[in-house]
Length: 178
Image 1 (cartoon, rainbow, N blue to C red):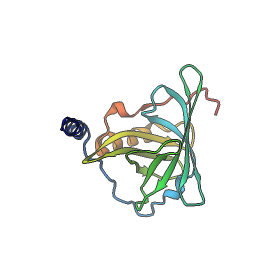
Image 2 (image 1 turned 30 degrees about the vertical axis):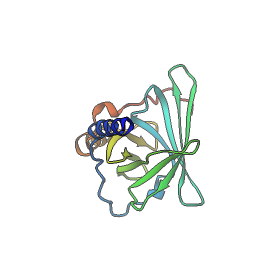
Image 3 (image 1 turned 90 degrees about the vertical axis):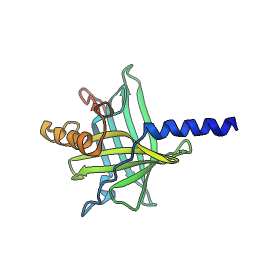
Image 4 (image 1 turned 120 degrees about the vertical axis):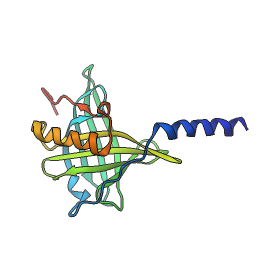
């Protein structure tokens, strides 16, 4: 009985901490396959990392190997190898850690992109009975972005998607050796 009460409290707290995840309306002409290649993270929630890149490499099964690389403040390298799994929505993909089994799905939603220059996305964690916004990223095919475009995408993620400003911070891309 104590276990059931404990689980109830845990799920109640989790439910109050997470809100609903906004799902973007599928965009005409959306094609998740076009995210393939290298992206530079201009802003995001990648804590204590600089020079962050995200590589989406197509797999034979139609999904992507998703590799995040960056530098830690002590100069050491960071890498994370994930699997980006296509969904029925061309504006989203699910993430699975290839080294561990993900307990709860993490879905990334593309809020806006032209596939050639910029991409704004956010992620949601789905827990039993609730879901919540987790993080956001503003990506560029180059290691910099026009201030006006960045402001537009930041505004989209904060004011339309509902991320808080602490979930999307500038990522240094200066003096990087990729």
